[in-house]
Length: 117
Length: 117
DNA sequence: ACGCTCGTACGATAGGCATCGTAGTACGGC
DNA sequence: GCCGTACTACGATGCCTATCGTACGAGCGT
Figure (cartoon, rainbow over the protein chains, first blue to last red):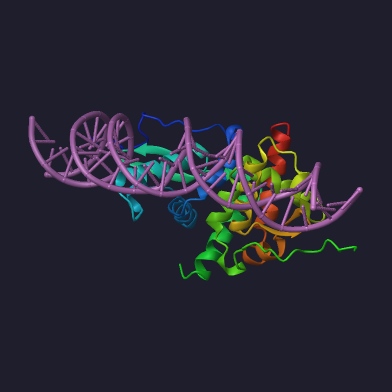
């Protein structure tokens, strides 16, 4: 049976849009690894599986960082088969803090150039 | 003798403009008290003495927060008599990360309205 | 059924940090 | 010279967190 590997029913807790706190977002992005994740997520059009990231930490630490981002309201996560897909919460963030995400991504890109990636 | 209470010679270490790291700035602003300080600093035209802030922490903790902001490159500090004056490093931040500071301040203001200050 | 891959849970550890109190220094006014 | 104000230095404390390793669960392919 071609069991279409769609979104699994085990779901993950996300903060509602109005529960997203600016301080939490800033704290989430103040870690180099998490900032890098968000940058890659923004660069890629659609959602990415956790395994697509080549991070300089172990898998358990990676899980931790993705959870911090999700609980801060920066990313949205869902299971698709065994993979866990990640996507930026652009819509919610732009609605709550217009222009902030773009400014942050631009700043991160600028710094990456300045420091030689 | 009318010893003009100008800038004292005991100076404070500030990061050079090119040493300012985005992660450090975000971390500095991810604390509610420090975000509040920066908001008040941005609202007021010129520099403000530490004692002008009415923060819900002791003086030693206040000193700590101002130092974090200074070492992250967010504010500039100098002594004037016994007072320590604080000013936003708008020029440097706008130069390094165009639009970021404004977006952050707008986001903070928006959240303050949303949550009832 | 079996194994493989992807991701989680849990405990341990080490370092960071927000907070305080107390004791001290620097400066200006009297 | 003496006092008061503004800020600092230092140590203590308790919490948070980034990291790891190991053991486990969930789903897919064969």
